[in-house]
Image (cartoon, rainbow, N blue to C red; front, side):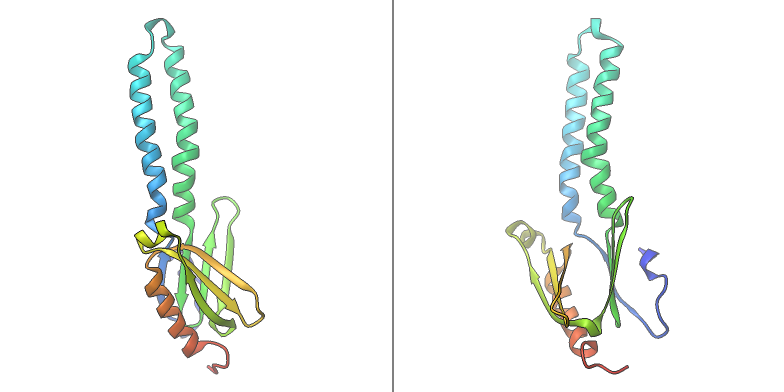
Length: 165
């Protein structure tokens, strides 16, 4: 995950370098298993008179479904990163159109977290950052949310509004 490490300021130290929660890959794994079962069953039940065009049609449909339900969500997970340093939070998301945020700790007034029931089962959730301007920034699907919330609260306390370098 060294992609976000580029461009750190002098004296800036990486504290956390993480991706979104691995639990988000559960859907693509289930989809891949279902596609394998459907492909195997479809090939086994395909009448001989439909050969070879039926096989090619089945494989084309499975390839498109695999791209949409397995490859794209996995790529989205892979490129979603969050880097927390002693000075700022850097995030990056997006496969084709990337969105980057660079949030100085000195602009964060409050840190809170939220998690659905399913997210709590996996220990993940969303960080909600309230800026000094009143704007709220949400970083969804982070792993170890309780630990990240605690750590970021301490960092904001040490380096947040009113901190002089």
